Every structure is written in structure tokens, then in C-alpha cells.
Amino acid sequence: MKIIHQNSEEMQLKDGNTKSVVFGGIFIIIALATGFSAMFGSAVSSIWVSLLFLLAGALSVFASSSIFVSISKSNNQITYQKKRLIGGSATTHAISDVFRVETVSSWREVTRSAPQGRNGFSVSTPNQQLVVQSFIVMKDGTQLPLSHQGGSGFTMYSVVVGTGKDVAIASTVATFLGVPFQEITPPSAGTGINRGGIGTQI
Image 1 (cartoon, rainbow, N blue to C red):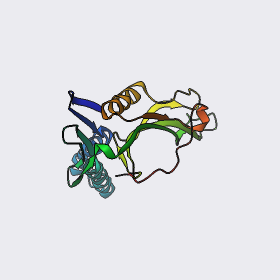
Image 2 (cartoon, rainbow, N blue to C red; image 1 turned 45 degrees about the vertical axis):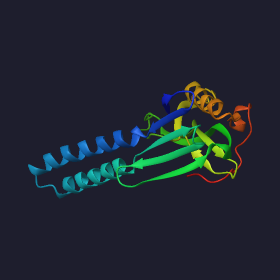
Image 3 (tube, rainbow, N blue to C red; image 1 turned 45 degrees about the horizontal axis):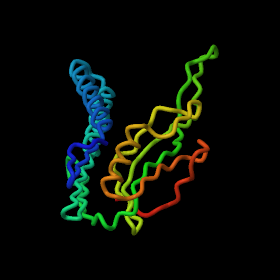
Image 4 (cartoon, helix red, strand yellow; image 1 turned 180 degrees about the horizontal axis):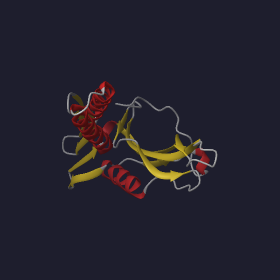
């Protein structure tokens, strides 16, 4: 999430989900490489592997989305857009209907494989990663995500709540809108409250 334009009356923000595009591109490259090698061999399995990678890559690229938010004080309006390669959505909201801006941090369980031991087996161990996402929350409970949910890279063994960039930008948006800002942290960090099920995401 970043602010791409701001003056006394207008603010524009953009957040792109680049991970899906990167992974999709990698899968497509693998598919092309596998398919090219299959052309010189007779292994049917190589062709199927190539097709699977190509399908996964295409789905990842087409599923990627970007968020664009335009705020106009003179029009008392927030224009919220979600763009995809195919399709998307756009909604408008009144600034006067904004309740607050918040940055939410929560723990997500991820599984990591440990290196192989002497017995030759690798062990998958669950781990907790801190993920962060910012929202504009409307008075009716509707949530407008300002960013895609992203991992901070920190685990339970290195407890750091939120990221400075996310918090700073969300706080700037709240100040511009003239509404409160709140950072909601996971209970395990011992510094905040658990996020209740507020409203509906768009």
C-alpha cells in the first residue's frame, strides 16, 4: 500500500498484489521449459507436468488483483476499486460515513519443512507468522481493505506487531479523513485486543 497522490483536498492510494504475478510467471517459465524439453523426448508425463504448471501459472496471474482508492473531500466521496486482468469491482462511499481507519495484525499458521536429519526424514513443523492488513471501516460495519493481507516475516519467536510502513500510511489516511486510527494487535502479543467480526469485506 502506498500513497501515490495527496494534496489538501485529494488523496489516492494503490496496492498491487505482486506475489501472484511473480509466482504465476515462475510457473509459466517452468511450464515452457518443461514443454520444450518434452518436445525432444517421448515422456508423456513431462507434457502433463508442463500443462499443470502452465495452468497453475495462468490461474495465479489472472487471480492477481490491485486496489485503487481515491478520496475527494470536495465531493465527500471515496471511490474504491479492485482491478483484475479479467473483471473487477468499483464502489463509492461518503466520507461522512467513515467510522475509523485500522491496521489489523493477526497470527497465521504456516508449515515449514526442517532439513533432513540423520534418519533421512524431513519434519514439517507448524509456525506462526504475523500478517498485517489495513482497512477503512464504515459506520455500517463495511470494511474497505487498503492493502492485500501480507506477512511481516516475523514469527512467534520474534514478536513484532505490525510494520511501520503500514501503520504510518493508515494513520495518514485517518488524519486526512478526520477519523480515529486504531492498531489492533493479536492477543498473543500482549499489547492489543482480538479482532471481533466487524462488518463485511468488499
